[in-house]
Image (spheres, protein in one colour):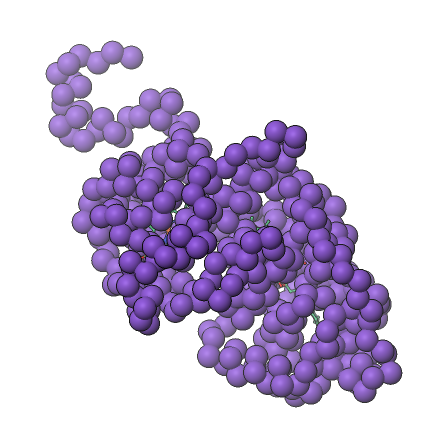
Length: 409
Ligand code: HEC
Ligand code: HEC
Ligand code: HEC
């Protein structure tokens, strides 16, 4: 389409030129939107009840809490005045506009794997958002982490730069899954064990990590602690709906499904599942605890009384309603944070476009004491072929106290 010059000049002066992108721009923006959803940018960059992408959400890190930035196109308080080069430097290098280090609460150790082209597509999409004027106060980290320069050392220790390199012996689908999981989807940010400084523990990718009072389980193909018993389709349906015949997503994973994976392309979810099923587990053999131990016997009685009506006496659950507790990583994780939390707090089902809200689980905080919660958790972790370390009453007491400081979710 050719416009007379005068009309074109008018459009430009009225700022309409950008409002009439050509087909290729549309394609880029649509792709950028899908990548922005996959990467969860909105979840972290939106304060509770705040304007989308305008920043200010507190992000818990091993060093302290830090606030996310305004990434709307506002020229003063957002990234409207940034060049593409400035923007790409954040995602690829963890460097801010004036070259200062960004905190790894922004998952640049993962986004660095994305291609330049994908970064620019995300930028193109963000540029179409309404600008929001909102200055975000700087972070409140204790010394020495409040010195951004110290992060240079952190980067040298834990940050490998460079975009994703396909593995030639693997299929195109596997490589697509690897690109997403190790890159923009940053699954390892929650699921990979961290060292004391919050860096990913190398060689332990996706083997499980405790965060925000939850445990993000092992999602390798490990038979006992991981997804060994899940099929590719089981993984796809969990990521798409928050449920499958084994589990129901709660806490940070419910949010992940709600804001991100439920909107992912089916082919991408399939690729993610294919990649996860190919991550070797450790498959350490473990023997269940003796059913005659006092805590196991007490736990069996509490289970029969309080839990079996929903989760069924053999722990098989009811598909789509009550999660299966026999087998699977969420009950047998080394760290019992999630099971203790679910018993104390109850759990609300995540509702997605693909699955409306299911039934919830009541809280047992008022009706079971620390010893009883520990016993029933220990029982569930060691019944029906499950095997995992016992949960102590002291652990339940500690989790009960720390949960008291957390808002319900
Ligand atoms: C897990 C939470 C999280 C996710 C996911 C996340 N960010 Fe961030 N981001 C942060 C935090 C926290 C900061 C502030 C870091 C700092 O101040 O050092 C930040 C900083 C930034 C900055 C720097 C802004 C500035 O003013 O310096 C940009 C740009 C940015 N993020 C873009 C993105 C994009 C694009 C995505 C999706 C691809 C994304 N972020 C995903 C948490 C996140
Ligand atoms: C913000 C942190 C976070 C991110 C990001 C995240 N997860 Fe999770 N994930 C969790 C937590 C916490 C749980 C445990 C939820 C529960 O107990 O209901 C979980 C549970 C799961 C489970 C179920 C395991 C089970 O046995 O019940 C799967 C599968 C999973 N995540 C896959 C993924 C994949 C794939 C990604 C990346 C696309 C991802 N997660 C990103 C925190 C996260
Ligand atoms: C009224 C029915 C009901 C009762 C009673 C009940 N639960 Fe649940 N439970 C549920 C539902 C529904 C969910 C899934 C919540 C969700 O969607 O996140 C669940 C989730 C769980 C989970 C998390 C499973 C996963 O895959 O993440 C565990 C563990 C659990 N329950 C254990 C127990 C124990 C132990 C008891 C007894 C002390 C109990 N439940 C009693 C309905 C119930």
